[in-house]
Length: 80
Image (cartoon, rainbow, N blue to C red; front, side, top):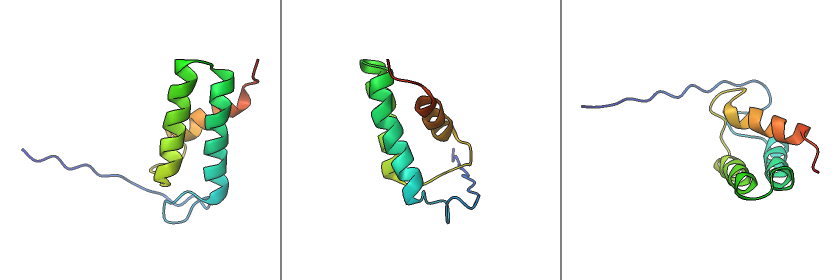
């Protein structure tokens, strides 16, 4: 049995050829740092780790993907 996975990429103008630009990489890494402040403990560590991994990958699979929405959500929260 063979499984084929197709990943679509789109160019929204914010990235070229699906690669994340420098501003977006900084935003994701900033969200990772902020996640540890907003969600102390294991939850913040997990969120930060996933955001860093996505930034390290440096490639956007779909616009408005989960990681982009997660970064937006975290950055909109105030640390306590």
